[in-house]
Length: 225
Ligand code: CDP
Image 1 (tube, rainbow, N blue to C red):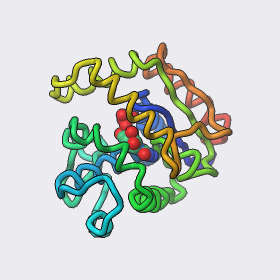
Image 2: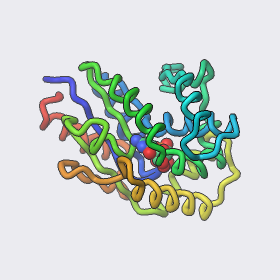
Image 3: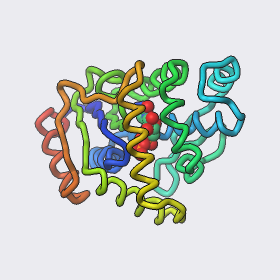
């Protein structure tokens, strides 16, 4: 049995984080939500009024940024400069700006360095867009997740409502997803792309339990169980 690095990539709101989190819990691994890191950078840029371009102000902000994943009540959350941010990272403003910000090489270089530092040999699941292609090209197991756009939008809307945010229509969510997928797939630096050795998962018609059971079989196949 060995402690694996598991990469979970795919399009917006297709259940990557649910799968990565459930796998980490089942296996006793650490889980890292790389999207939350890009959202935190975006949030800070909006707070400081920085435009989504390379700038001295951005470099200074990145140099001073303190990102830490903390577990509170069994939930993995991101602490940004000492504050746990949750709904702030899912606001309309952050959703609109996060993909343009994530095209910036200085942002990606800083986040990727941090992401790689989490692989300490004790088992890691990480979800994102470039985990299997760029962050951990040698990952032991890579999943590429997709689901039908309407299914993804409905899941995201249910998630937002559960968190108390009822401000999004289904059409707004669909539009934001499509726009982010387009920008994420077409940027120059580490675009969203299926790794050649990734295992495809379309979870449109799978329950959370079914998707986990299916993924655990692959963990076993790779010697992780
Ligand atoms: O949860 P959802 O799939 O909607 O998004 P997320 O994983 O929180 O990621 C938000 C945004 O961060 C994405 O649309 C990308 O622009 C960016 N991102 C990225 O560029 N690279 C990653 N490894 C993860 C996220």
